Image (cartoon, rainbow, N blue to C red):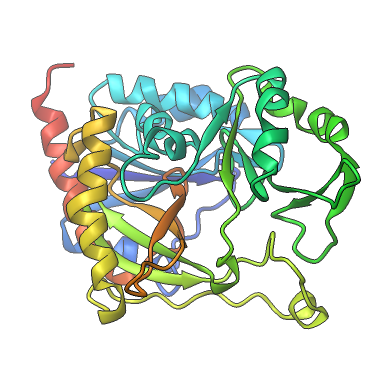
Length: 345
């Protein structure tokens, strides 16, 4: 009997499915074909939730690329579907419980002592934010991030504005605009929606080396499979007109064995990820088959070596990722499907 894997992303289930092997997803289809695995794209939309649940239960494995926030939609319905599918014995990556453990911004707080952390705080209510933010801002600008988000959504830089009692507030997605001046009370009002339900704000110091970019490490389970050195534009101070008008250029993918990343690679693979899995009570085989960690440049050491600060972990929709990761991703998926079949349902 053939092994079947579903690739799930947002779309119209009634529309024809494009599986062009020459597109950027082509290597992913090819890698699974080489592993003797049949693949299908399952387009997801909330109005077809029941049909999606039934369809996914017919697969051996399900790999999901759906952002936590997308055009005003969240993953709450999909996550419940995926839990049901996993409970039926289908391998799901990333499982919604894994996302809650490591794929929300709270992981920055949970792992703040692991070597990639900084002075990270969590505010669960507006009152908690009011009680601590004014004092924190005296030491320098802070970056506040909503619990679940992506692409800079709900990420704010806040800093004191001279001795006026006001603050400058900058949003990570408004890289072409100017920071806004407001009172702290106005900022508290603006941030109130982030505390709805199980919401909260994660709070870190602003990293002064942001203009040097960040390093994104891509992993299959606990093994790095590639890097990119990205240059986000949001939150940069003194944004120039040239930067505002420059076209967006995708950072090139670099091999896992690229020499300049080897010190960082050792730290991620040998120190930080093992300590994270221990802290979160996860085995290596619980990690997603594809995920990434964004690492900002921290202060230089006395010997002029780079330090790194975890900016976020991406689990829900890691794309694009290095083409050379596809065979390892397919192999890891096959191993996980075999393990899922051996577990009682």
